[in-house]
Length: 125
Image (cartoon, rainbow, N blue to C red; front, top):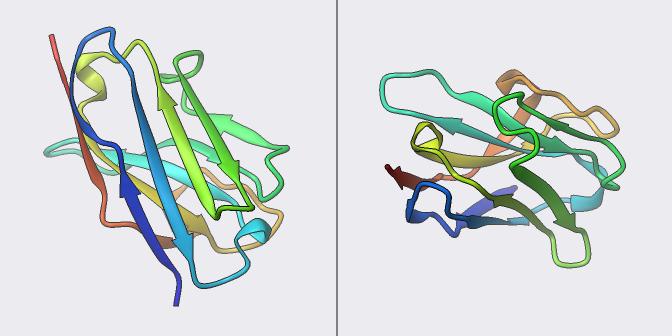
């Protein structure tokens, strides 16, 4: 059974930075893509960033391109999201997700099988 546990959320002022971490367990981590999604109150879950199993393919949502960086450490079964220059509109619950198929990096929720419980990020203006 795959388990994903996020950490690193919190309250930060606009322009600040946070680093989210996600610890994975349960299957061969390096084979599967990982992604971060976020969900703001009253809104649907949205794609933020995704990374392939070997880290060679990375996608970002337009809204975070140039500000956020996704990375992974396969030796530690960890995936990270470095968030810089945070904006109030980044406020949401951030969840990591593990992909359904090896070698395919998706950007839609249905392409990810397993989800963490989420961590709250709040950016004040």
